[in-house]
Image (cartoon, rainbow, N blue to C red; front, side, top):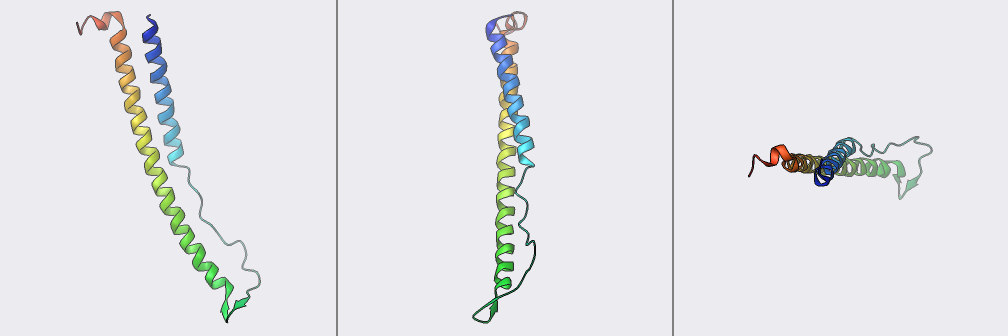
Length: 105
């Protein structure tokens, strides 16, 4: 077997592994923020502090959802790119094998 064939085989395996890693990364997300306990509620200018905190948690969780969706999409695109690179490397590997290289001459 030629050295270049082995190199293409290594690239094929490497790109395939990177694609798998990105698929697993696509399903990892930041969990929503939760209030553990309400505790005592103070007031600032007559408004309970806890009310503003609930609004903050709602907005922050909306932001986390947007970020999780964006990161998931980016990881899927990266995985598709790596799988296409793996297919290209696999095709290149077959082109370097002697019995297949005669077909393209």
